[in-house]
Amino acid sequence: MKLGAVAQNPIESIMKRLNVVPVPLLETQMAFTLSRLVMVATKLGVFDALAAGPLPGARVADECDTSRIGTEKLLFALAGAGYLDASDGEYALTPVSRKWLVTAGSHSLADKMLFQFLEWDWLARTEDYVRTGDPLDVHTAMTADADWDIYQRGMRAMASTPARELVRRLKLPKGARAMLDIGGSHGYFSVALCRKHKRLRSVILDLPEAVAQAAPILAAEGMGDRVVHRAGDALTDDLGENAYDLVLVSGLVHHFSDEQNRELAGRVSRALRPGGVLAVQDIFRPSTPKQAGQIGALLEFYFALTSRSGTWSIEDMTRWQQEANLQPRKPIRYRTVPGSGVQAAVKPR
Image (cartoon, rainbow, N blue to C red; front, side, top):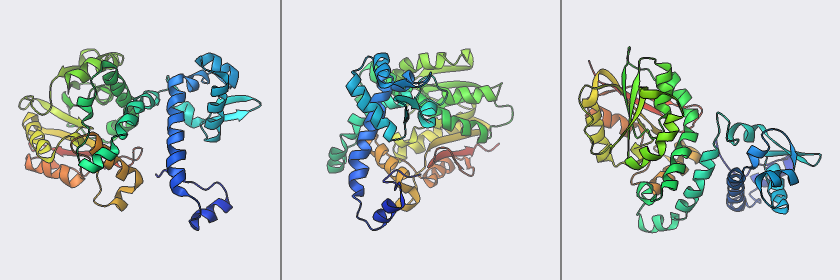
């Protein structure tokens, strides 16, 4: 997939091929304007207000406690961008907004839209990072409980889609009973795996700040004592020996250096039972920008800016696993989340 200037008729297609269309303008001003409008509409409850059916702009303004003129301008823009339908003086959700932006939806990304207000400020540090090479460590930058709360909710909102592929495609040891979810915060990956594998129980290891804000999110899943939190630090905590059938490290290695990831793989190896599986779920860094594509290349920069590392290649991950005396499996490349997947490895029996 790719974001960018998309021609809407044959004449525009010709103009784009001739390079007379100001593509950089479309991919900057129009892109950041649309981004902000979708985020603001989510925050103000516009999509939720339309969940029950079409409404005129004035009614949407009343529902959201916003000005009628400002709301009409927002609705008009969202309709032009394909997030709403406009007909007979009323606005209605389109399939994309109904599926992804209504808060109560099972696929809802509404909390991720709210988290992006934080990310918007983080990206303002781009020039400083390029000039100095000093990244923003987001885990230390978030000092308020409210920041940690929306961060956890945003991460949970993004978990539903990859969780479906993880559960369907990751092969667990026969009779797996014990799982360690390192950096699992909201716990949804553990919840999804435990729901499929009825004998499986999971311990989620994450920073105290993450656990404090993620606890209500996990509690809402109703998994009782089958999925529990443990406050700690993946870089320093003792993980035990021969204790787990599965260790999941999800969305974490891009925050760590090569040395830290090698050391973590070694401790995970000791913590696994014979036949146990280490599954690293993350963005895969291709070796060239062409292989990465637009989204992969942008994510490589984003994670370099917001952490101490950046994304890692499959070759890097398998090297950590081999040095930890684990046997890497063939990588699982997600179809629904392009550029990401799971690199798993097995501890020999």
